[in-house]
Picture 1 (spheres, protein in one colour):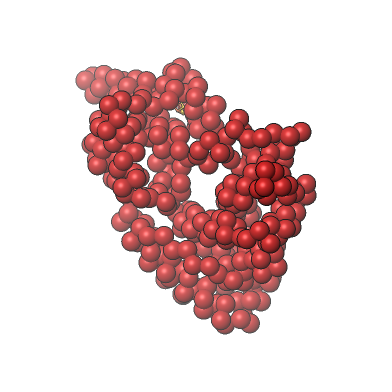
Picture 2 (cartoon, rainbow, N blue to C red):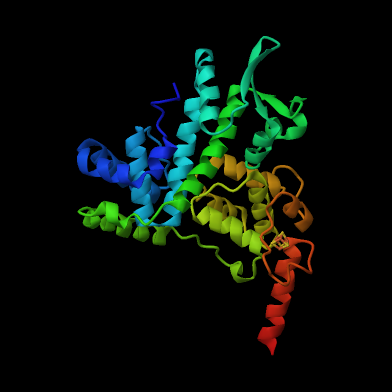
Length: 336
Ligand code: SF4
């Protein structure tokens, strides 16, 4: 079942007074929330995922504690780990629970989802608008609109695809709620020492983990590359194209493959063998083709350009052109 007892209750998370009540009156939830946080921080220091399932009260208290700690990499890690729990729960539903997915869509304000039997398979019919809103970070043809069966503004997708679309919904919604949460200080009266200790421990661990970019000059990276690196530093999972751009960019400016893999080791879903394979493939070691980063136009059309008001970005067509122009300028300046 993913309805009333499901582990995430977005309305509960938004209700600060109820969280305060739970904290004071429910010692079991309080203890399991603190235990969870201690383990999450411990696992973070080892770069290991921590994704046990929690009940909805514990989940809500944990996110308020994270709000108090107020460290971006911690919330990123929490959301990424719990995103996987969320997705696995949905992907593991049996046919008799498919109606719950529809109810769940409806509880999220998505009223027109339904189930349809097509070629002896039960598929979910959801509006293509929802599909394209949440498919951006999902790689693979089965998440591209062009490969979907379209029917009057709806697509038909299976449970596994639904679980991934909802997973992305979960991430967006969690960040929205987190960003709108009020200052949590007043609900934690009596717990400040414990929370400040957790915060201190996390800051110390994160300081030690900060990425070392070796000999390459990161001060002249274009904004897009800086953004992908920041996302990794914050424990996020950049999209497939952002990773490809970052890996090929770093390769072209002279970083070796081990250095590139090491950078990706901070992504929340890191798998060393797969990362090494991808990097060796992109850099031509096993494919014979040395790939280049995509052009700015491609990154722009994939919502991966972060030029802001950078004046150089307005004049160039490729992230490597940005780096080379800045490098030339820096060399000239140093000679003066
Ligand atoms: S304009 Fe090009 S180099 Fe600049 S941020 Fe966008 S994609 Fe990157």
